[in-house]
Image (cartoon, rainbow, N blue to C red):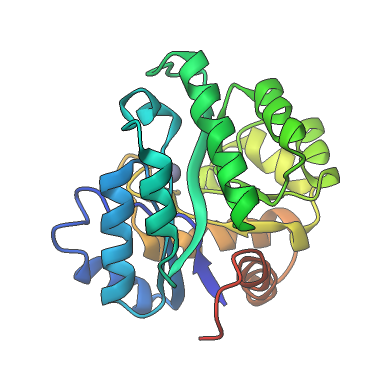
Length: 253
Ligand SMILES: [Zn+2]
């Protein structure tokens, strides 16, 4: 089953009129889309979209870039939001030492708190890790919680092995359609531990590079997996889809 495990339909340019994008995705064979929050407002919008559209699900969480702006009672709000039946995960959460939009100390505190939050509720985590390999492991190790999807994977092959050893999963965006480095990492990994995503509106795959990304283009990501792993396209769709269904405990469609 073709599943986009990470699409920001809760922000512009999608959120005011998401329908054409969802329709194009459905026409491309995408059966299920997971919409992660980046702050409280977008978490709420993700839930609203999940209520409106079949096959859409939400995750709630505070993105590292937004961690300095998180309200003091954000965990209480996430608690209420996560009770919604279409909320499947806590995300996206993590550390971003590349952009450093929020002080690292704040990023670590908010990530640590959300790991504990997810662990207590037995919800999977959607982890954003940008140039923060060591600290990402340090915080997850401290909580002994690795029910996590390392989304938009950008670290090296050795780190990927450690991610999988801990029982976590990895997902790739359209970057695998053009980045030799990402393709070399992908080639070393077992497909049954992998998922696919667009991370739209960013990370557009070839041949749409530089243009706006959208969920329909998750097909290009699956196609790149097929080429790199030398597995037929329909099998890639099957394997990565099953992995996403199991990992996020998506109800039968
Ligand atoms: Zn994202």
